[in-house]
Image 1 (tube, rainbow, N blue to C red):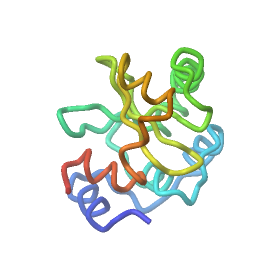
Image 2: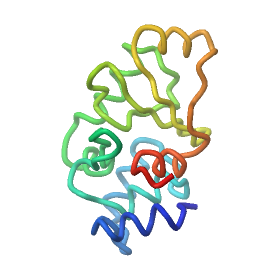
Image 3: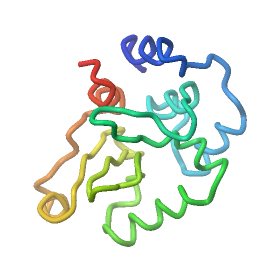
Image 4: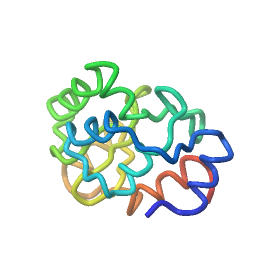
Amino acid sequence: MLSEKVVNHCKHQGWWFDDITQEYMDALQQIRMELHSDCALFYLHAEDGPAFSGRNHQQMYQICWFVVNSDSYTMSIQGIHQTLKLPKEYIPLDSFEGEYGYFYNRSTGQVLGLGLEEDWYRFIEGTLQPQWPDFNAFLEWSFELD
């Protein structure tokens, strides 16, 4: 369940929509995301165009928008799995610019912040674990609500 802090922040920003579109539900199912997860609830109800601005002006995808309006998101998923050798459960939350990005684990709901070089090696070795226990905690951090 998304926290009241996240929902209120989105409403205050004018990003929250009560109605859910079938198109966005289909987009999430296309990328195999559980529709009752915090992540899906966020993307089904919150939108500010193709991206949200978060901490340090980090641009986080509005995943549904990208799946519906371009092939780039699906290609991005394939690219990170091939290039970074991330497990299939991980999907990108941003464009991985500046050699650092955030990834959502569709199986556990955790969020991983990952950079190239040392972070990547540590993750592949199993010594770097996701920093956020769930998507809601990541959103609170990203939108500086903590």
